[in-house]
Image (cartoon, rainbow, N blue to C red; front, side, top):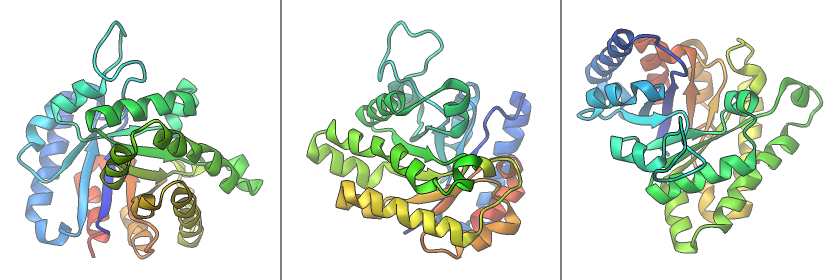
Length: 264
C-alpha cells in the first residue's frame, strides 16, 4: 500500500505571502526530490481562506489538496452563513476533507451525528474523507483506548448503512482514510511508541473489517507530534500507512523529510 503523508496547516500561516512562500518551497522540494518520494502520496490541508491560493500553485503538481472542514448542513448550497459545502470544495479542486479532528470535537463539540452528515455530504460530491479518531490522556491512562475508538468508529458502520451498497463499496475502496490521533500526543511532544500505535492500528483495521471486508485495505495513518526524527520509526510498521502532520508541516524541508521516510 502506498503511504500517505498529509500536512494539516490548521490556522497557519497568518498571511498570504507566508502561505505562498510555504507552498512554493514545498513544490520546489518535491520536484527536486521526486525520485525519493515516489512511494508515497503527498497532501496538504491549508485553512479554508487559503485553499484557492494553494490550489492555483498545486494544480500542475502531484501534491494533493485537502480541506480541514466541510459543512454538515448542505452538500451543495443554501442559507448557511459561514459554511463551505462539499460541492464548492470539489469545484475548487479539493480532493479530500479532514473530518472529526480532535480540535473540532473539543472546541465545536462535534460528535458522530454531525460527523456522519459531513461524511455523507462528502460522499455525495466525490470528496474523500480523512476521519480522525483518538482518545484523551485520561482514557489512555484508564486503559480505555479501544473502547473509545470503537465508539468513534461506529460512524463508519452508520455511513455504510446510509449509502447504496455498490456506491458504498466503490467509495470506501478509494475515498476513505482513518487517522488515529491520540489527543494527548497532538502538539504536546508526547509520542506513543511504535508498538503502541501498531497495536491500535491493528484494532482499528479489525473493527473496520467487521463492518465491510473492503475496509481491510483502508489506509490507517498516525498523527501526533510527528517529526523527521521519529518518522522513520513509524514508517517501519506495516500497520502505519502514513502520517497526519501538524507543526512539522509548516516547514517544507521537515515535511519532505517525513515524506521521504515513508517512501523507502
